[in-house]
Image 1 (cartoon, rainbow, N blue to C red):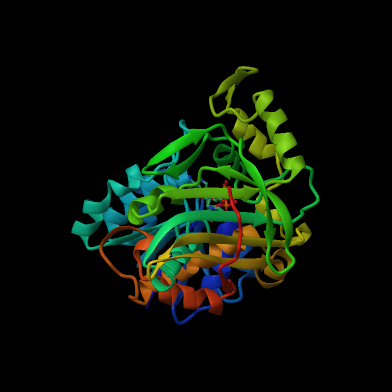
Image 2: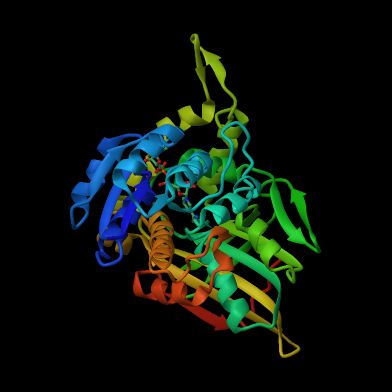
Length: 398
Ligand code: NDP
């Protein structure tokens, strides 16, 4: 009887619990565990069939091993924070359980996310006959699968990739983040890196922007070039790429607040002493900001996330845009969440389903684009994230 353990009861964890519970034949038994069990219980009360809950500190391998020994899952879906990736992978190796996550490891004291730490587990997972699937959210996640899908079906060789993440949603707050504020701010304030002619090129954060008009009347938005972790794996696995960039939309109010918060030191990750206590500014800021899992009822509008890919087919240049549009309120109606958590949680559920059904079961540590994209793409259409391909979209991107 397939048993799954979900770790993390935030915005994404809630969606994963809902979506797994909808598929009783694949996820027969579900346990949702997090640092604070009350949050798990709150989610469990909303889910349509009974699921178990538990308390765990996922930074502690012994605690994880004890929980896994009790729950006996086949797979852990890690939707806690990137800081917990390695301890959960260690616990998986110790207990013989498969692993999946949506964000790559980042040490708490260095705002630098890279795959090197998790790729170093390749041999250990392979020897143990276990699979670790990395980056099964939307970006990374669906965007990697989109790239693999168009590379497989539309091109002989891909040369340029632009991942464009537009959130046209409005939650009505002057400043709030749609997923964990600490991770979001660390990501957005990092130096920009993009791939060009065989190397990553660094430029200052938010220094390049352009306007992008989304299809299906989602609107026109300012998108900013920034670094995102899937660029590292996609440029490795698609060496024909000459250029790869990631773009995200930001509203003026978000950017204004971020600049001021940065200027006054509130986004810092090093501890400062305050009234005899050590306080990390960004963690205190997280405490003050709206919890992303509470944004669902008040967020209206749509997300539009996709990839513009160009390359060669039969010796001729070709360009394709593949995207998903997701409506914040439709997500809230279905699983009590806004679309950012939804678009992350659904691919996490689908990746887990691919593994448990054996469609993607392969010992070792894998980025999601290394798997056959076809069954995943079919399930995206089935479980709430339908996608569209436009050939020759005519975009002129920087
Ligand atoms: P939240 O902060 O809302 O949720 C994180 C959850 O993990 C919380 O329940 C938190 O507990 C729990 N947690 C944190 N530390 C521990 C620990 N040591 N032990 C056990 N539980 C812990 O974040 P989100 O739900 O928004 O994001 C979850 C993950 O999804 C993040 O890694 C994020 O980077 C990733 N993500 C990926 C995306 C993609 O497209 N690939 C997009 C969006 C997010 P507590 O409530 O006590 O703090």
